[in-house]
Image (cartoon, rainbow, N blue to C red; front, side, top):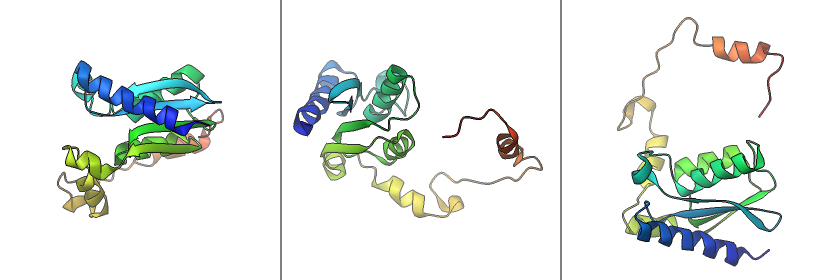
Length: 156
């Protein structure tokens, strides 16, 4: 498979998005059986959606195109090493591989530094910059019990 060709398309999408004023300098494509089935550009600021990163957008588009929630037989190509949020989305989507062009340090030099998120993950929840507090309710485990008991669930 021509990985450079698909990475070039991701980089082109990133640059085109910047030039069109769509969003940040990130692009992604998803390939199955040697053909692009979905693309995504960062459009966080134009959609007012902080999750609208190129990889997440491409994953959403690919899942819609394939009518599935997993991308087992697909490869994701990203213009830059995925951020922590996109990394999580990629693992949930389960592509068979990810190829990227620029490194996260390149993104940081351009003003897209996500190192603080990695640091936050390692902190105890209550010590994070945005504190997280668990409040235990009597029924807090009931959704999980409902899931265990639901006969027609679709495992993922």
